[in-house]
Image 1 (spheres, rainbow, N blue to C red):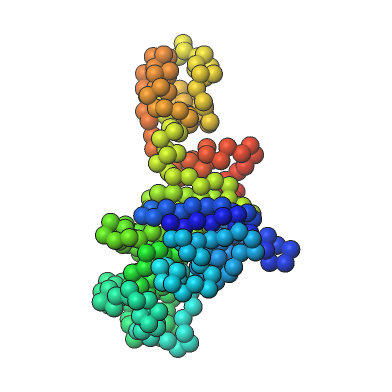
Image 2 (image 1 turned 30 degrees about the vertical axis):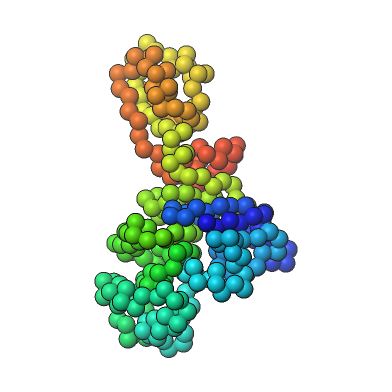
Length: 300
């Protein structure tokens, strides 16, 4: 388990991370969302022990991270701009990380390099951005650590590669102790992989929610009522977070138990009613509940 308690990091007059308290459970994919400059990279660098918080503490499996080699054996950090040794090849970096991690699996590195179609002996400096990202992911997966921290890791990967990496993450989670923490500025990028998502904005944590819990309490329902029925007659008994009407079709996002919501809507004798899955964007919009807070401006 990862625990951050009242963590703050400043660079001069700039507060990059502001009093963040966060718990990341094992065995779940945690998505850290926020625009560029929201504090995601700074937080991951503190999580990785590269930076130390000015105030507060970060522990991984009850161990402090900063200057703690034992703790650092448990995770692999993939930064937004991956660093490779000058004139190195993938095999050179593989030999380096093999010495850093006792759990390193060379056979897995070789298998993944073949699957991804990367040349093991080619200079990394000649790789494209996407190829460098792929190599970082391969090295991280071959390290076989309990945690992997990814800073904009999917940025630069084509859709096929993004899906392949997500599939590998899911497979590892089913086969061993493995917890990915993925930072991104793009909600859609994490829509199909995250179990829990935290929203950073201007250095502060606006929310951190288990998506299943949120989805169980917030529902998107489309309904068509007869022309003679006035939906306003039941609206005060529903916790409507958002509503939209296009012709006779009403689309509601409502908080509460789905069965109780539908019972109230049925009082209008609807000719059509359907529950729809909520997108990650809709979950955030409804869960933050901050008046005037436009997540679309922040995330996209």
